[in-house]
Length: 377
Ligand code: C2E
Ligand code: SIN
Ligand code: SIN
Ligand code: FE
Ligand code: FE
Image (cartoon, rainbow, N blue to C red; front, side, top):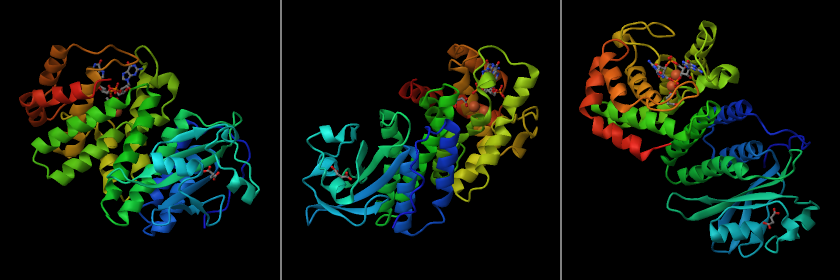
């Protein structure tokens, strides 16, 4: 049913970069896989790797029979358990996640399955699989953390949620195909936030840049579906920073010429990471990553493109990104006062920025400020 077990030896937590590479590897496989059963195996594999667990089980609810059954499992064959028993049953009934590092000390745990499979559950993580309407469709469960600490932590819950979200979405997509797009947005945001975490930014930065870009795109007359794609892709503009050494990225003061040169490679690096995908959102993200530091007057990087040689997405994200960067504290500078930011946008109209976009920005300032207030750090 599932892929062969990996070596279940003790191993370290993945680094941020390994995590990214892992998520990318799985995202890349999703579009090619239109078979629901194989997709669910893929998500179980993803879940297991995200939390460094020895195995993962997807339980589905059979309400008529009052049972849970193991749809995909690295550990069990096809098993049914009553909806009224065990941790999985509890999660299915309550719709709430459970993290247990001492299952045998918890009266809700049912050791029956361990007995049947001559297995020892040392610790477990169980999440409800929810439909968009909020109905519980199943339970996603990981057992036995493989790191030296040998215990799940709250961060594992968040990571595992990524795989659980995908599973939930895909289950529904079997009924409603466009649920797939929601899960894609979700994973891209998570990815972008993982990248931002390294530069010690909050997740709100990527949300704001996305919202600002969406407003600008809409006011430029892009059709709604394209605005949506731009919004979903914009958070990945700085994903190439994942490959910039901390010593440079987090340097408190100004950069030397060499360091600046290194940081500037993040545009090409982002393009390299994203360009292999056939997903339209990731194709848009590749353009944005490579062009968000180009300038209207041709003095930007990496290609010194000018004017409309720069893709509209690149010109839009340039405005959104700089507006947000100037208004935020960075490891190397304090946030600028509001008036100074507006002066800068005006002054750089036709230099750094597409003048038409600066005009749209200033004419609709209240919309942008509302976004900033809604997504404070
Ligand atoms: P970032 O911090 O996200 O900044 C994005 C862009 O916003 C910058 O692109 C620049 O166009 C604009 N920006 C941000 N802060 C300022 C500012 O104080 N003055 C002006 N005039 N513009 C500002 P840029 O310059 O290509 O930098 C790209 C990335 O390189 C930055 O992303 C940041 O991660 C890094 N970086 C740039 N300068 C420094 C620095 O002096 N020290 C450190 N540690 N990193 C820097
Ligand atoms: C339980 O949910 O309590 C038992 C299921 C399992 O350990 O796999
Ligand atoms: C952000 O941190 O994403 C907002 C500005 C920037 O691109 O650095
Ligand atoms: Fe940026
Ligand atoms: Fe950038």
